[in-house]
Length: 332
Image 1 (cartoon, helix red, strand yellow):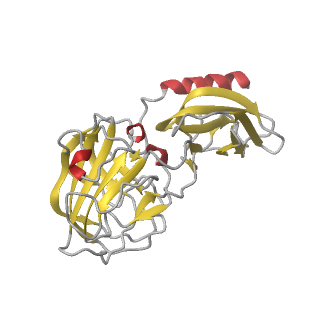
Image 2: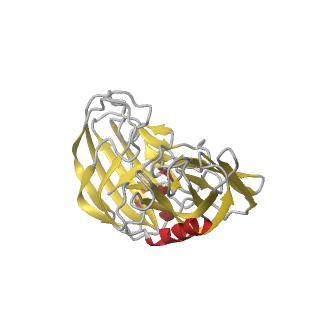
Image 3: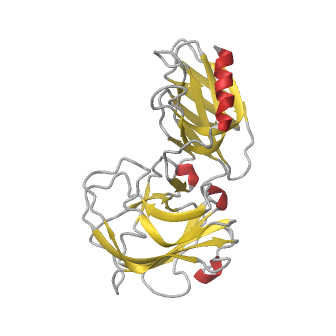
């Protein structure tokens, strides 16, 4: 059984051209996963101005953005429709997390794209608690496409729903990074067992459960792909979301569990993604676990923001901050 498993894992390297199921997510580490935080900007304030900085390696593998949207928190209950007047500009930027300027205009490398001209956009009512992290509250179609050239990205939102500063009556809280987020995110459920990565005491490890007892388990450690449907190879509902840089084999125990731990010194602020292939508990063929994404290097250097909360002006009233924060954005 080991040889077919190994051949199957190596064949995944050529699957990147297959259709993807997800829109593209920024920061990329939250693909398929709610970040767990919440922000009033940009949908729940009547007036304000904010810039979001995103490090370029967290921008999805796309060059052209035609639509974007924010997803609401998973704890959102039913809310009414919202008519919101805003302008969105997106620009390439050479500034870094640590060199952001409180003067907004200095954070764009060149003239930003006016993705959405100043207008009132009608966000729909929410009638049930959000469950799908790949669906925003609404897809905002741009008046002009944004072309990403890098190295980093700045999204600017000018909110002019009212002439006064305050909260909207519709509490549209967007899913956001939090400075207290953990380092590990388990996402992208597939057709097989469950995997979770960990980093403790200088050792990187992973634990798998829900496999066929006493059978091989192939670990895929590498870059994050948009989910690739491999149902035609494995079985219904199976997908692969890791393009492996390293592939190695373990064996699960009589309870259908497996684990590994290896010494590891991670580069600063690097994200690794771990998935496993295994024999299912019943039936022939292969199954794939969920994906565990682990963020090394502390809780900074990926995304942050600066903004005006109760005033207008060319310079930020608050920020930029030294910890990760800001809403998750979906693109297509």
